[in-house]
Every structure is written in C-alpha cells, then in structure tokens.
Length: 246
Image 1 (spheres, rainbow, N blue to C red):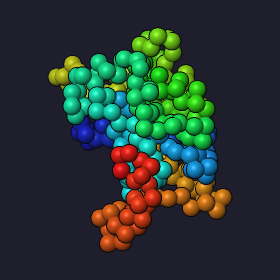
Image 2: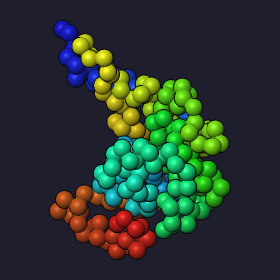
Image 3: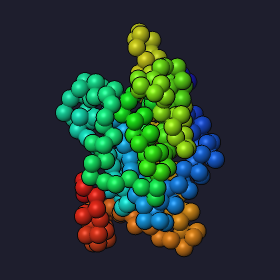
Image 4: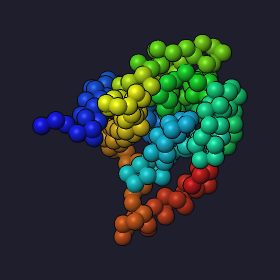
C-alpha cells in the first residue's frame, strides 16, 4: 500500500523525534540546569522569534508546566502584529535589554532559546547577554541549517556556538521536509513539533530530578478541570507579582 502524503509526513516526524530523543546526554544535562535553577529559586526564561516564539509559549502557564517561567515575548518579534516586520526585526541588534527590561537575569537562572536557523541577531545577542550574566543557556536549533548559512550578527557567531547545551531538532535545511509531485516547493515544517517535544522532555526530566531530591516544584494543572482552578489560583497569587505576562 502506497503511503499517503500525511503518512509520509508522519514517518518523517517519527524518525526525527526518535533522533531528537537519542540526545540523551544533552537532555539530561539541560534538565539538570533547569532543575538547579528551580532548586535555587531561579527562573526559566524562554524566548524565540518568528514562529519559534511558540516554543516560549509552550512552557508558559501550561497544564503540567512549571510556574517559575518567564517568557520573553515582544510583539515586534512575533507574528501577530506584522509577520514580515518580525523577519526584519529579528535581524537587528539591541533587543536584549528590551526583552529583559522587566527582569534581572542572574547566575541562578536558565535561558532557553529556540531558533531554527540560529543565524539572526536577536537570539545570538540574547545568548551572549545571558552568558555575561552567568545564566545557563539552552539552545534548540537546526544544526544542518545553521551550519549551512552565515551569521547575521556582528560577531560572526551562530546560536549553537553559544549554548551551554545545544539540542538539535534534526530538521531539513529550510525546515520543510516533504516533497510532493507537482509542487516544486517543499512543505511540512518540523521544527515546531520536534522543538516542543524536546522542551517537554527537558521539563519532565527536570521534574524527575527534583523529585529524586525530595523537591516538589510548583506546577500548573488544567484550569478546565474541576479541581484545577483552585490549585492554579494559589500559584497565581504567588507568581502574578513576579511574572509580568501572568
């Protein structure tokens, strides 16, 4: 039986997720940085530009997600105000102070940066800024793509060269992975699916590490369950003054 188009895409995703989860050393190391941050009352900062901003939202105010998360989401770098404008903005320098204008990054914190190409100025600048502050930097990127292009940052560096831990999403150059007869342009991007899977794997592993040390982290549950609202309200009372977007 010939596989349909969506089945071909499923097979591609399955293979890439399998490869991503074989990064066992990197997953454990990144999870340890997250666990240490939470254990020491640090924060998990998450950022991405363009479509990668969705990975920052993935770990924020999420059922099953940590409460000590501060997403760095600036409308100019997202898609909902001007998609084409965000492409221009992510190539500019000077955004790190703006993204951290409400927070003080410290050595107790972790910054998770997602960028498929890893070549644009904003994520590179953020990684350098975090390193200067002593925070751990976890990078999720497409190494094949990043290694095939030049940097757009004045330093000449790319994001994967600045992470304490680098996780590959095993995407194709250009992200899209599926070719269909009659269409010259490939379709089926994989970075968001694989990226969110990697992120959740890090959070799950970090939670297990904390529990093994007798530490129970603050975790949101579903606000749409019968008991969830009361559970979350107690967390929101504590964290709303500390997290701008809550």
